Length: 273
Length: 273
Image (cartoon, rainbow over all chains, first blue to last red; front, top):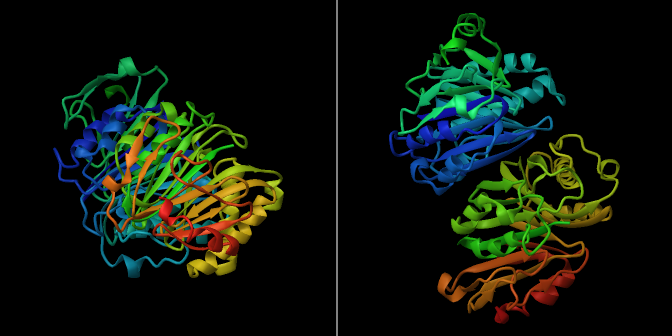
């Protein structure tokens, strides 16, 4: 399997702290040593850093840890290969263009019979993973459903949630998708999130001897949501998503999702940060 | 204007030496300080490093200089903005997917009236540069001409040469395009290349105090072609391409191009390396 990490924020924010924890799981505190990647959005532009090497030993991962690139949306992935060889074209996140935007996709899980169940016509995969195949299928379906123009976010991501559910039915699919504005998370069996906002507190990584006092690093208006397959800190309260649940974040805030979750978790946690 | 650098090789080869020279022109020995980018292919996969900061001061460029990523095809670009703001979405090279491959595009020059002259329907630009617009137009034209399947390289790149000529007619367009296998260069007014193969010699950068003895760095079977808007070394013989001339390289060797150039330069220079 793999691990996912994503961020949505209302101000350009670096992810050095969370990424420092995650990269340790790529060959050090975790077995996800078959490559890693991260995509940072800056406005409509994005840039990815990828390496088929283990993140814990990667000079590129070290740079990403130390060089604070500030972004409003980030998607990270560390890989433990199960479908497709260990090579660059099979390394997440996958980035493709549609509707004049960069779309980024990362997947944790494993799919069976995906070639047959998810037929593709327009967006052809480059590598051999189930994950890239599923992403291409999603883009094909979006093109067929909505044509040349992107619909409004709630319509679009409700449809993507249905597609995710169909993908999930083929095995396990914890999914992150973003266009840099909206950040969509679908939970198959393993996805957690938290929102950091004022009053900020301290957080300590599980995987490295590192702590940060967000009070010192933020302004009172900052809102930052972090999503991860497994919690990255041991002194914050993470929401555990339920199977088949999806959520949509924009500028750090939860803006749509499966009904039960919106009711259950949004008001409850803001004072615990 | 901008500067271009590209490489085609028959064995995975790093471009640290040439890149070290080029990056100095991004704010140090040259004025191209409005961002830079490089795309490395490894098989069908590719990874890009980009920064809207000047390359001469970029920690990411420093990493690319020091960390030898071995590749059979590379495209680099340093930018001096003339069309579109200085930001990530306007930073070359541009990478998009078609026919199950990654296509990379970089452009030196400036185009007038490109919105009107190069109408786009399918592949919508993300940024505001003339360069990305022209790339999207090329992809649209390829889709219209060849449909769902990539034709053989000579047919494809002869057609791309015609498209490049039409783009060039709007101003200045020195163009590099690659799918990781074939590397295409179109000269508007400023493009040079050389092929390094046995017997190898020494080369010294123009822009930095750096020399390399390729005899020590290669095997006798290595063939590496480097293409640049301006020569990067002062002790090697660079071919200057002629206006409207195009050339196609594969695995380091010239495999097709405008007739006059194939006749004029291929046999002449191999002993001068």
